Amino acid sequence: MTYFEMFIILINISMFHTIIPSVLFGNLSWYYHQLFIVFINIAYLIWNSKILFINKIKINSTINLIIIILISIYLLEIPRYLIKGLEGRSIILTLLNAFTFLSFSLTLNTIYLKQRQKGNAKTALITLIKPYIYFSIFIASISVIVFFLAKLNFIDLFSNPAPSGLSTYMDNNAETLHTRYFTPLFITIISAGARGTNFFMDTAIFSGISHEPHIATYLMTPALFMMYGLKTISVKKKILFSAIFFVFFLIASSLTNLLVLLTIGVIYLLKLFLINKRAISTLFIVSIVVIVSLTLSFEVLGLNNFLLKINNSGGSKDYSLHFINYILTPATIWGDGVFNVPYPYAKVDNIGFIFSVLIILFYAFGYLASAKAIFQSNKLLQFVGLATLYFFLHSLKIIQLIFIYPFTVFILFILVKAFEVNKTPNQ
Image (cartoon, rainbow, N blue to C red; front, top):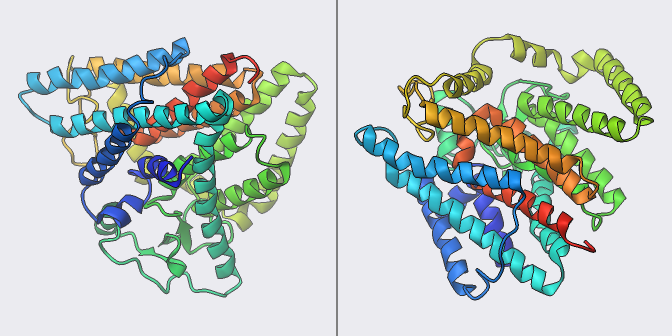
C-alpha cells in the first residue's frame, strides 16, 4: 500500500472524529472538509479506474440487508424532503454524505483489489486494517506519554491553551459548554476538569487528537480488537499496545467506552464458555479479580465519579437518552427524517415511522452480523466481529450520526471482507 492510499483511508475515517481535517483544510464547516475529501476519493478512483470494477463483491446476507437499509435511508430522504416542503436539513448536504459513502467504499474496494493482486484476500484485508490500527496506537501512545510526563512533573498540562480556530467542534464546545482546551507539547488535546475514572489525574481529560474523549475512544477502540486478529503483530507487541490502549481509556474517562468494553468482555467470556465449558473457571476468576480490584481501588482510581455520572441528570447521559427517545417515538409517517438530528434547541422532535423502523432494523442486523462473526472459527473474523459489535454498541450514544460518518463505511467494509476471506479456501 502506498503512503497516499494510507492517507486516503485515514483522512476519511478522521472526518468528524479528529482535528486532522481542520489542520489540513482550515477551520471550516464540516461540509467543506467533506467536499475536499470526496474530491480526493474521486481523483484516486479516476487514476485507478481500470481496477475499480474487476470483481463482483460477495456479501454475507445479513450485511447485504444492512447495506440495503443504509441505501434506503438515503433514497427515502429525497421524497421526505419534498413532501415536507423543503424543510429541515438541506438535501444538498445529504447528497454530499451519500457521495462520501459511495466514493469511500469504492476507494476502499480499489485499494483492496490492488493488494489482492499482489497476494491473496487475507493479506489484502490485513493491509487495509494495519494503517488504522497503527494510527490508533499512535494517538493513544502520545496521550499516554504526555500523561506520564505530567505525573512525573516534567511538563505542565495547562501551559499551552488551545488557540481558537483549531477546530470548529472545539470552538463550539468552548462557546456552548465552556470547555477549556489545552495542547500539551502540541501533540495531544486535553480539557480541564475531573470526570469519569480520572485514573490519578483529577484535573484533566485526555481526548487524543479529537474534541471529546468519547469521540476518540469511538474511533480507536475497534482497532484494539482488530489487532488481536492479526498474526503479523507479535504477542509481545499486542500486550504492549493493549496496555497503552487501556491506560488511554482510563485517562480519557469516557463512561460509554468503559461500559461497552465491559459488555464486550462479558460477551466474549460467555462465548468461550459456550464453546469450552472449562472457560467458566476463567470467567469466575476474572469476575472475582475485577470485583476485588474495583472495591479496593474505587477512590484511588476515581471510580466514584463514574457512579456520580450515571446517577446525575443532565450532560451526555441525557443527550444520549434524547437521541434514543427520538428514534423510538415517531409521530407521523415521514417526520423530520434521519438527518435532522435532535440536538438541544434544534426543534426536531419527530423522526417519522419509516425512518424509525429502518434505523432499528439497521442496528438489529448490525448486532446479528457481529454475533455471526464472533462465533466463527476464523480468528480474524472473530475479532473483526468484536470490533464491529463495539462500534454498534458505542454508536447508541449518537444513534443517527452513524449515517454521516465515513468511519461507518470503513467498519462495514472490513466486516464484509472478513466474511469474504472466511469463505475463501486456504485463507
